[in-house]
Image: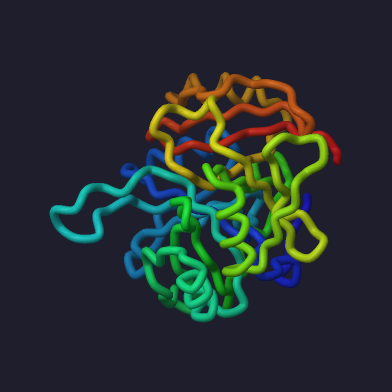
Length: 262
């Protein structure tokens, strides 16, 4: 199993994902059945945050969605991608300087790390994670675990310039792929960036899409539908593997892919 150690998450690299859902326990149960995760509602001092594991290794977080203030609308049910940082305060300043919007300023999360949530200039929301005791996902690129993070944006040039200035991510066009860029830390590809596709439902905002590896995309999609999920893009073959874009029963969008060796 591809396990991750702290030195592998260089600044700018996607290092964690978490889900905000109205019914936290239902979400935990759904992903347990779909991917084999284990998790339970966490302690009250951390808002009940659940760290889900795969074979004993952390893979993702699930929290209960709650309005920030009484009378506010419920936040959307979404998966959030977190990018690694060596200094969250410096990242926050760089995000602001590069015309990003800080939505939740830097905060301490116990002794696990420091985080913030922001939006890039095109509107895509992401998190930043500075590790202390917890550096992020400890298993990736394995069936049931995160394997890719992809920015969907209406403006590749603006987004590429922002992530370069704010988080050191270089945007490099991928040969043979129209409107698709690799997002690189140094010479290593750590994610992708593409334009908003026609397959996205009308009104879909710019966003980061999380991909989970599976052994059989078709059977996982069948299992998802039986458990109340929905299919946005049916399984299809593409250069990286056979994939599908789906939602869980509470509406969170994600992708599953049976990846081919690159």
